[in-house]
Amino acid sequence: MTYAIIETGGKQLRVEPGRFYDIERLSVEPDETITLESVLFVQHDDGVAIGQPFVDGATVEGTVLRHLRDRKVLVYKMKPKKKTRKKRGHRQEITRLMINSISFNGSVFTAEAAAPAEPEAISETESSDEAQ
Image (cartoon, rainbow, N blue to C red; front, side, top):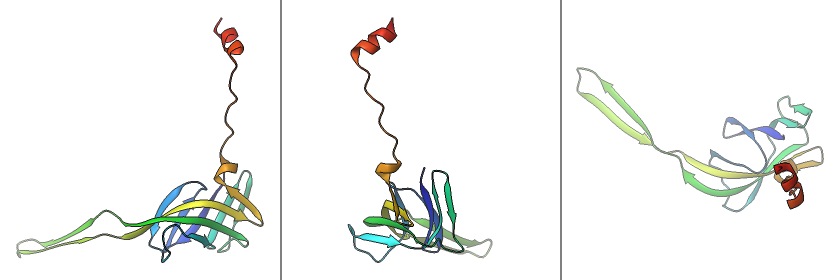
């Protein structure tokens, strides 16, 4: 299993190829490709690379699917016995990012390479032998 830990929007996030993630809004148009170079950790099969603070030669490439707004967070402040109440809401702007590949020292790890192979089809003669 291949994954990386990246830093974006002041947060650290564990990403895998072939999955999408909601992150802080990026100033990139939808359907454009972006390369993130702030990679803190890369793990592929048994190999591990830890950065201090970033891994040299490691990048994560992704495609921006769309920009949207997160769900509303309500902030309610009240002081008892003072008739003071304040209700405010906030919706964070986010970007949905599809991770295409993780590259490390010239090796590119994509979702197709990380996916397990499909099992072979069983022929009718083998399945009838197993049933008896």
